[in-house]
Length: 226
Image 1 (cartoon, rainbow, N blue to C red):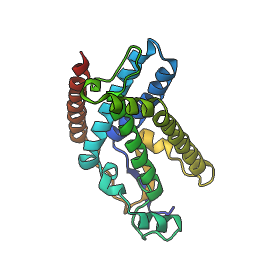
Image 2: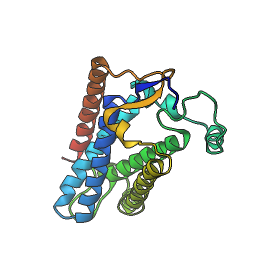
Image 3: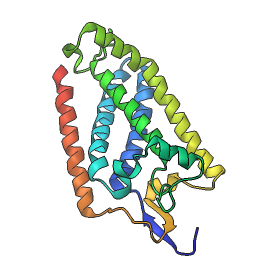
C-alpha cells in the first residue's frame, strides 16, 4: 500500500445489508428444509425472502453504488485469465470490489440461487406443501423441479457456500487481506485515486423503494396458492 492511501467507501449500505441478509436467509432455508415437517412453513418464508433479495440485487446491480453495479465486475473470461496469471490491466482497480475470480463466483452463486428459487416455486413435496406456481406447470416439470430443489440444487448451494468461506479464509491467512470487515463497515484502505461509491440518504431511499416493490411482487406470487 502506498503512502497516498485513504479509507474509501466501496460497499454501500444496501449492498452490505443484502449480503448479510442473503447469507442468513440461505442458512435458515437449508436448516428448515433439513428439519422438514412443520419447519417447511418457515422454509417457504425464507425462500420468499431470498426471492425478494435476489430481485432487489438484480435492480441494484444497475442503479446501485459504483462497485455494486454489474458493470463494475462483469469481467470477460480472457481478462479473468490474465488476472489469474498476474498480468491484469494496470490501474484497472480489479481488487477494489469483486476481483475477476470473485466476480464469477458471485454470478454463479446468484444464478444457482435463482434456479433454486424458481424450482421451489413449482415444487411439490407430495406431502403437505407445494410452490405457489405448482398448478401452472405440468406434473413432469414439477417433478423435475422438485428433484433438483431438494437434491442437487441444495447441495450445490452448500458446496458453493463452503468454497466462498474457504476463499475468504485464504485471502485472510495467505494474502493478509480482510474481505469480511469491508462488507461490515463498507470501507477499504485504498489509493486516493480510487473513486468511492455513492452511499447517501438518497441512494438508501432508492434502495428501500426497490426492495419494497420487490417484496410486494413476491407477496403477490406467494398468494397465488391461497
